[in-house]
Length: 103
Image (cartoon, rainbow, N blue to C red):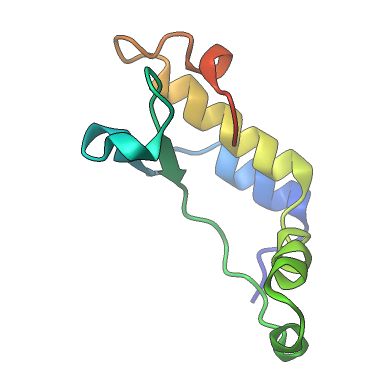
């Protein structure tokens, strides 16, 4: 069952601590980022997506866009900000949000 509207999901994710996984691919594979840059991926748990069998008939990019609509921009922005805020307390990552080139 869906946890409700995107704004209530956003509030529940933003207002409580949550775990997330950070992977720094460029640490072990220098081809994962441009020279003198890093490649960091953050995986955040989220409410379960509502399955839609009709999406299997769409091209992959179109199906992804439809699934993305299940999470409002406010939720994504709030979770992104929470992750950046938590990472910014680590030495060397204080200004991480200013260093993002692409996401």
